[in-house]
Length: 185
Image (cartoon, rainbow, N blue to C red):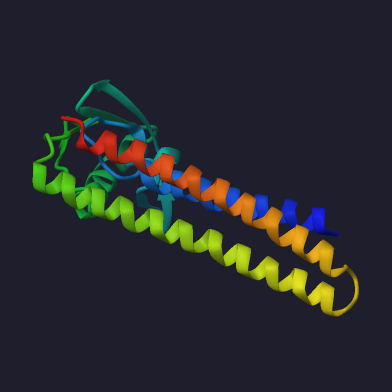
C-alpha cells in the first residue's frame, strides 16, 4: 500500500516537472527554437489549433525561425496570430513562408525573463509540495483506519520526503540551466 502511494507520488511529481519543462521551452532565450511558437493557437476554421499541426517550423539560422504552412491559405491567419501573441515578434511573409527574426534580448528583458522563470519554478515547487501534503494525509488516514502501523506511517513519510527533495532538486537544476540560457549573450 505504501509502495503504491510512493509510486503515485513520483508519477504526479514527474508530471509537474514535465509540465514545467514544456512551459520553460516557450520562454524566449537568445536562440531561436521551434518551441517558442509550436503551441501558439491559430484560429483554423473556427477551432484553435496549435501551429505545429498547421505548419513545419525550422531554424535556418541561430536567430531566425521559418514557418512553412501545409495549407498556403492559412498564411495570413498564422501571421495575425503571431502578431497578436505576447512574443513581441514581427513576422515577414513572402507569400509562401513566414520568417521570424529574433532580435537580441536587452539586459532588462533578460532580467524580466529570469523573474518569469523563477515564478514558474516556484509554482512547480508548490505543486510538488501539494502532492506531498495530499499523500501524507492519505498515509495518516490509513494509519487512523489501522490499515498501516505507526512505523509504516513514519517510513512512508520519510520516503515521501526523500522523493520530494529529489524532485525539488531537479526543479532547481532545470531553473539554473534555463537561467544560464537566458543570460547567455
